[in-house]
Image 1 (cartoon, one colour):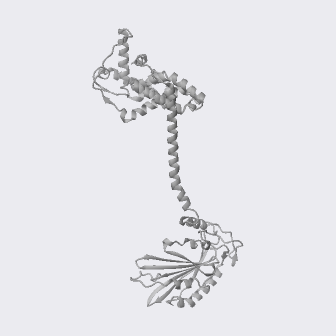
Image 2 (cartoon, one colour; image 1 turned 120 degrees about the horizontal axis):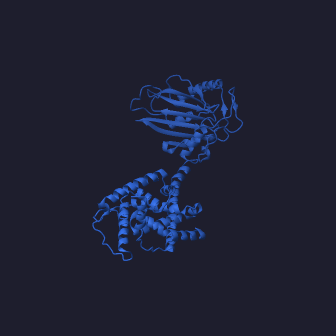
Image 3 (cartoon, chains in turn orange, cyan; image 1 turned 180 degrees about the vertical axis):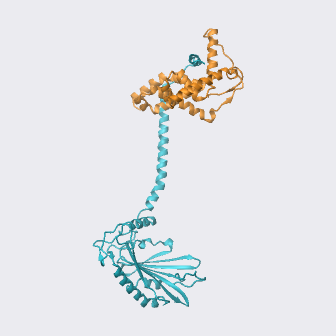
Length: 182
Length: 287
């Protein structure tokens, strides 16, 4: 790779590493696995970097690679689900007010844990559309499907999310089947 | 869940993001290493495929070359398709250049067929009829001396076979000559092929088929093939490839191939190679 291309790649990595990791976390629900996914995706992008830069598709291409990497990893046998038998101990957060912390905790726990119950591709659509704020066309390109599929997957994903939130066992504190790094 | 709540929920979900312990230099180094490894892997894969293809293709290509068995078949097949310049059927005529099909190289100079100086001669039906009469007469004279007492009369028949793009084709004459030996009936088959029209040469003689090549006088090549076609049924074929590009094939059997009945076992003795060779090399049995 040429020097200037590599410099641009470094700039891209510094700028996109955190957003990609957040996106990966929403996909999989685990920060460590999210970091692995982000780094693997960035390595894959490095291989195609000259072509990506020429076509100026870095943003959507990065999301696409990240999504593919996550879906590929999900298919690996050692990534299959396991049964959680106990809850992790709660830790106090002294940086925010108790009321705000409670609201944030509700939002984080309920919405994200419910999101992890949604099928992977529907989850990906919801994250790309409502977290990364991609348009329908950009989401379709990132997912490698048609815009109509994105719309239908988004509608089904929202419906499944509502169902997941309405099930206390799925988002509550009881031991439930939990996907680790799903 | 309305969309706004979902957005808020997703933003809240990543609000407790741990610090990013991320080294871009390490990532670039890993990417370089990964790319190199991937290229090496692809290179090894391509090389393996190339070697595998070469291992299959090279022996095949070499086997098809001139001099090999398959090569001879390929050349023979090509010769069958070789077009011949149009010639007249009005009388014996000789083409100006070397005979077609082109010589078949078999790795030995004496096995090149047809011989380089062969001139293809085209015979009219009337001339072939005249030739068959002379061959019939000649066989009447020599057969009883060489092989045995002829059992009945016979007639040499001649014909021409034309290929799809061949205006002349193969000109041949053949006959079965029945004879008695020790009270049992046999027959010998005789076939004469005009100069330059025989496609298969002595190079087609393979040891694996029980065929042997012998040099003969006057630049001729004689092949002898002995084989078994059934329980105790032997066939001996002697072919005299002559220097003028013609060939005479004499086949002896240890039973009577002209009889409609199956031979009774045990069958008798086939004529000897020397007897068949004498007949095949008879100078008067020629075009």
